Image (cartoon, rainbow, N blue to C red; front, top):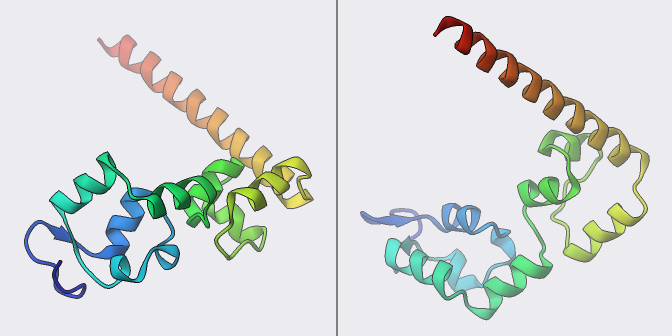
Length: 132
């Protein structure tokens, strides 16, 4: 692997690879964090994930976007709920089992946003049909 700061052609920084793999970079092995990842290495990680990658995906700690998705809120909602650290799968399950008020509020907000987006998309589709 080449140097992290200057990945060669066809390579990506560890942060990019971690994001694409859906894992929290600081929880990955040091050798992963210290080196660029080539396309071939990335493909191998996806097709035949090593034990550390399987473990991180199952149990975390998870990056913010994964935590938000699992909780059914936005990443901004996590911030409003003062969730600033990566969470494990068990911590996420605990929050879902006994949701604090901020989580109930943010899930409601997220549901309203999704409903509004669906309404707007339906209206756009109806307008497009009228024009054609």
